[in-house]
Image (cartoon, rainbow, N blue to C red):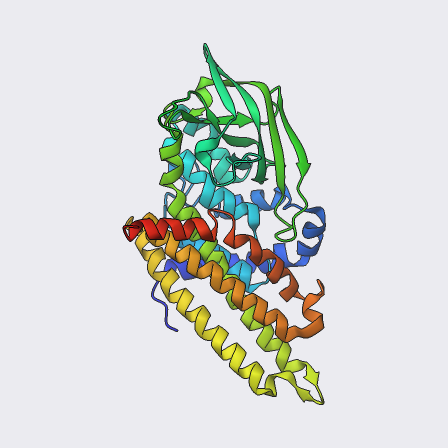
Length: 382
């Protein structure tokens, strides 16, 4: 269906991204999956292309274009090539907005040039063992001692934590028994700070090119100068970027569902069963036709929400609706595509298997489908 989301500048950017992925990502992707991480060099290359600095102001080496559509294109072209750029997406769309919104001038001078160039890699540490989506239940503490906070605690499921130079840690600096959301603060922990250590790399079933680790903090002295925003205001800050974070997941879900349909159409036209192409069976035609319609419906919903996000008009409830619909659609579509591959769909030699395992987490991270339903229900007055 016709899309009216992008301008000629966006499409020029698409050509650059498509060429980069074909030359610098696809030939090496299998090795990166086996290593369980993207190499640092990819960030430097994307930085030199200007990709990482698009939303960063020009005085810090960026382009000064806070336009989410460039991130949409990056994900769409990666999915079209049957790869992902996991931690690149996280740095651009989930973590960078915190630095742009809450860093002071000295912090911007210190960190934004490195973020634009790809020399500084980032992670955000929210989730703890036992807390999951309940951010108000965070137990990591940061006690003020003069010009430092003394940080103690543990975090898990931290995307990009293995190579991160800067980790935004959500910690409790005070406790209010009447308001569990109060007293949370964002602190930037730098690689090499005494007491900061990385635990095991977690062995996931999907998105294996994206490292996910455990982090621990034992009496880490974090300068007050590394605090993002005001003390005790982190819960509100975290909610500020949730709509974009959930849109980022939805964009990947629709792009990967579309890629699943495309690779399945190609496969069934070549694969024969009982002496005839699988594509000639009525069930195959009906299944792919239905999936194509579902993907187009999700794309139309998503595109509307992208424009609302760019205009600053996307509500939290609508972001939840989009994430819920797009990720659930992805799950159904990729599962049915794998079925059409038969036994070969279960083999990791075929991209549909990777699309299948990568898809599952989309209904969990950035808020589970169940949490999305709660948010939507609340918007309905329930």
